[in-house]
Amino acid sequence: VDGGVGVSHFTLAAYSDTGLFKHLIFLLILCLYVLIIVSNLLLIVVICMNRSLHEPTTALFPLLLIQVLTDVHTISTEFCFLQIYCIYTYATIEFFCLAVMSYDRYLAICCPLQYNVHMTSKKVALLIALTWLIPLITVVVIVMLTVTLPLCGNVIYKVYCGNWAIAKLACVNTRVNNIFGLLYMFVSVVLPLILILFTYMRILKICFSGCKQTRQKALSTCSPHLASLINFFFGCCFQIVQSRFDMSSVPNIVNILLSLYFLTCQPLFTPVLYGLKMSKIFTICKRLLCGLNK
Image (cartoon, rainbow, N blue to C red; front, side, top):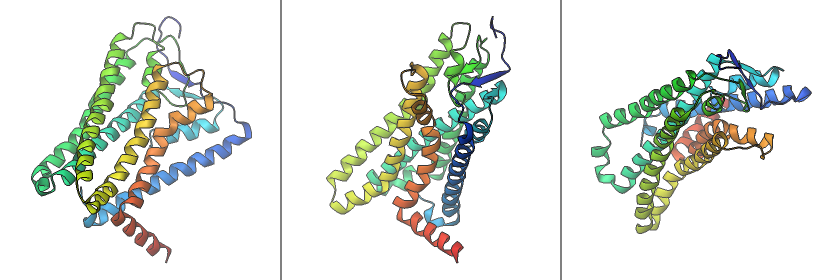
């Protein structure tokens, strides 16, 4: 590795020897993974099968399960960058989806009579395309800039690969990577957040100027989205702080749990939040599950 020679693998140094507990940890993580998959699939199936509802993690867990059981915590360079690409695109798409959802809520609550005029099928298709294409393209640029760097080390103090964690191992100046990284952060986090805050300021203004029934209905519709946003934003903020600043004073277990937070809690809480808070989805889920138990 010395002298900037390319590396064939990275060592994930955040893992510690858990001894006999590794099998228990493996089972807990596996159960969490299965729960996330099942809950999200249930929500998707229910929405797809019921036209009345057609209204306005895998990048982490397989590696995590393998690393928990093994004693040598390494990952090949190719899989490391693939994991970075998958995680970063997931995070960016999630933020873009939350921004589009806030725009949809804004039109439905603030401009209900003009909703069908503004939210046409073509516009929906365009928003969906942009939500996916922009992250898929921008993350390619970020990853390729890091791939070309000559590295003087291969130890990453995380439980999964991080783009800036690898960039810090470079033997050369990483100013270009830093500039593009900050630009990516602005486009993927700051801009969607500004749009979300603006739309909810308008929504809250309408809510508090209307009658009690209107206010309750609007808040009930928006609460799952707001809870999902706050939950995801907290996890992403810690990720940014952890990657950019020295976190050696924070206990290792706390670093690990918080670094996994936005990759585990968001995909688990989202179907629960929408399934419980939105009465139509909750009723159909309950009917479906009760029918399976008969």
